[in-house]
Amino acid sequence: MRFVLPARIRQRLQPAHPETIPADQRGRDAAIHKGRPSIPECPEGWVTGPPDFVIAGAEKAGTTRWRRLMSNHPMIHGPARELHWFDQFFESWPTPEDGTTYERYFPRPPGHIAGEKSPSYMRLFWVPAMLREAAPDTRIILILRDPLDRYISGRAFLERFRTRNTKRGMTQSMYSRRAVEESFTRSQYADQVESILEVFPREQLLVLQFEACNADPLGQIARTFEFVGVPPHVPSEEALAAEVNVTKKEKVVLDPRRERALRTRYRTDALRLQTLVPELDLSLWPSAAEPTDPSTEPTDPRAEPTDP
Image 1 (cartoon, rainbow, N blue to C red):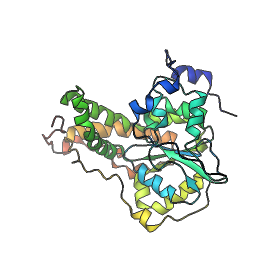
Image 2: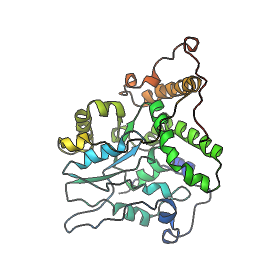
Image 3: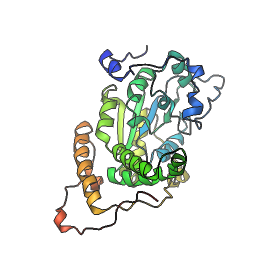
Image 4: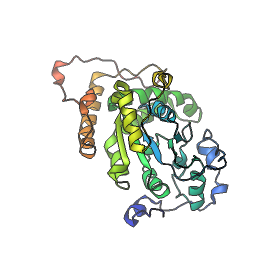
């Protein structure tokens, strides 16, 4: 039986003018995610269905490495690459046919599990409700990183797309502002987690911390395997040692005044997040520490880079 989203939430999330063009005529795959994996074959004797787990965020917080560690388990299946299935429904609601297509991405032998990783899901307001309808029993995994560190890494990551966007007519200053704003909001976790908990029960959400995953990968992957319901398994040494998606762009240097402003906002958000996720260890996040007296800090006139 499919979960039916409460009317009060669906009404709030449903667009005022939903798209009525049939799914096979929208060209959404080509326009939005050219790199989406193709639908895999389902071997004889295997089954398909909704995902058993979804790594839904956060971006630049080690989700690629974690998905690869999970794939090292012999009972875990699913696309190795990011699927981003629900990204495309920004102005429409998935049809039953869309739901059937989504399920085809997850073939697995009976008794095994399958899932996906799409770290954009956490920040896209329409995704939790759609995911709840498509996969009401799925278990959601979030990996959260010190928000200031994630901001800095995210700023460097978004520089990869500067040339593409400026060629399409966006000025350098416009793109810089957009990158700053997006990097900032993607590190504000409380609203994003709350949107998930509005439609999923708390027991279906596991929140890991990037710093703990780096310090104790075996302990944290054991928690993950227990959460998704598979037997204990120790990933290979090769899988544990592999580095993925290391940022190659030069990291942003923050003016201390800008850094103080970010720390203030992120600390407020982290304290609210802790009310939603009481097990969160804020001592792992320096940006969530008590602020220091700004009068004792030197002022550096260097500003965060904007235009190249």
